[in-house]
Length: 490
Image 1 (cartoon, helix red, strand yellow):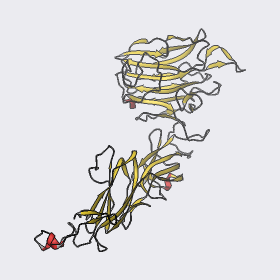
Image 2 (tube, one colour; image 1 turned 30 degrees about the vertical axis):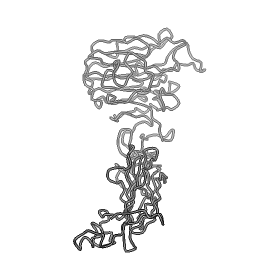
Image 3 (cartoon, helix red, strand yellow; image 1 turned 90 degrees about the vertical axis):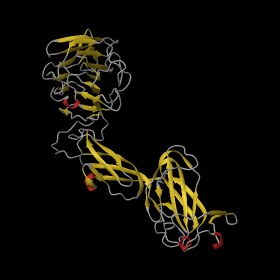
Image 4 (cartoon, one colour; image 1 turned 120 degrees about the horizontal axis):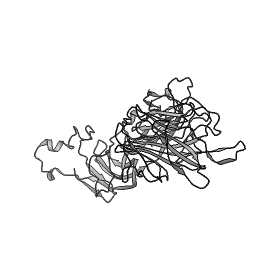
């Protein structure tokens, strides 16, 4: 039916006709007051019925894209239904498409996403009287509520792969699940990673730590932590206590190009009184070993004329010097970038500001190789050193290649994770109590649906586990339509 605005009482009303004004020809035309309704005033099929009054608000710009609760209260005579439309881009006078909310009555509703919103109010004549719309009030609410959990994840519903905490509040939309977890089962016989060491790539390659490698947050090239090999005194650990190993098979690299780059920090030897010796660097016989079925690659550091020397070997016994770093008194607190690569069958080394070294043809298949880092040569009294952001790529990062920088330059930025990054070993911030042992790195995944919080806990190796959790669930307050058709919170 048609409607008009009555200026005497400032309301929208339906147009009333006399029998003579109607041009219909059948009794059904006179009695079928609402298309889709069975009887006058019935709300049966309200979602498909033709309302007596339709009113569109102006388009509201929330200012940014967000999840919101669209609230609407109506002063009307008759039955009310409210529809809400949304858009992420600037619309014209009307937002097209289906409504994100079709409230009707007594429903639990979900929040709606967008930047631009428009309300449509429908009023149907009922037994109370003919449709009349007096006032419409609208609000876009982004108020949130939260609740906290500090307990074992086994108390939550679901499975280890996906846990569902029992919520005290009701939500129109869960926005985030924040928190951390800790596994305190010291009898766990599953191989564990050292606290704070992990692979940031999508591969999540399993790393075996002999037990002496730590992630330290007070020394690093890039935040939040670096890997420390051996202790500060260089006398308390044996060579079997401070190395990492992992398989290259998960990288998928066979006989093609590859590049390994990382940052290395040596530490000077000191006398018993703590005074630095004449430039002399504590080092193991070798600290890098790409262990293959054929020709291996070894790296070691040494001291030459009071400066740090870098050498490589392809058999572990014959060593070739690539040169020394000469920077004043020596790099006692400096980080240096090391690179090992195969470019179209040629082995290349690049050690910070030492020129690129070509080591000849290298065609070894490394798909079954093992990468070993640490104190590897049997010297149990070496000083400590650090490694940060150890990256393996399945390309030779030449000038202009993805993920820069190019091979011949010193990087000025943190290594880039791209599609060619097969492994990125870093020190991670840990939630484990300092000194606690036999604990895996655990993170909480913030996975959400509309109204139920979900989360999963993962070891750095990718295994899903249960643990003690401290969680915060944040979301928009519950949204519903009341018995009068208004959209309200609560």
